[in-house]
Image (tube, one colour):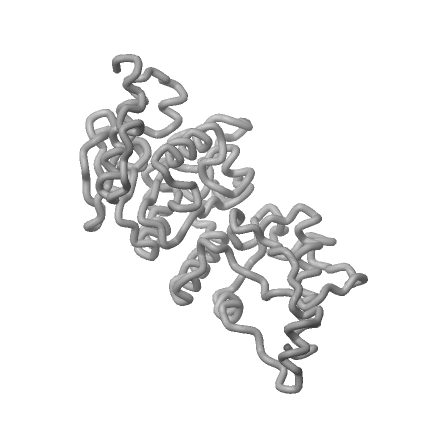
Length: 323
């Protein structure tokens, strides 16, 4: 491996570790950079493969970006109004402890696969991260909440809009409703990283003077933001969609009949089977076994559609009380 390449790689890792130590969770990655990261490192024609295999170059350092954390554009809160990095964030400290030759920096495992698809997804993420079409939302948000999960997922969940927790962390469904959604996914025999999760809106609906609490997106806000979601679905191409709550149903299907009437009945979004069901927040408000069973029956139907094996125990969830 050429010495120049190694030096640049060491410097890049040092810079990323410095950003991480200062609390930075996301960095901007261009489409071209993603393409280059997917290429193997150049070989040093003057090096001895035998020595390289037995020497320090065979060691590696930990991945600076855990697979559970997607590489995403730098959040709005980490830049000033002119788009410049905050003082101190852009400067990397000197590399006082050079590391052995490390492995190339990786992009998240969930976004590794087809290079063209990964690049297209990264380009879409970058466009969404700087969107200011809804000026009132852009001015009040802390983070754009793009989406999270496996871009090759067979199952995709769509919710309404980010809440205060999601706005603060830049990830959908991380509050109490998100914890419940994760439990539902696990009860299906899957992990959160196996699916993809997104919302109709990428910004939290502004709630002036409120640190918590949410409001429903307006029709104009939904119409402005939903093309981004359409692009996500077109790129992911899930086998099944799950619409969580009435707003998600309205955004994806254009139907306002309401979740009470539509849940449990298969619908179609651009040829993709779609299951409407209650939002996890509804189950937090109404914890009756009968309501939990309704959502679980919807998930059993989804599992059957995806040909996921269902155990007798899973079929009997929430029936012990006679519901």
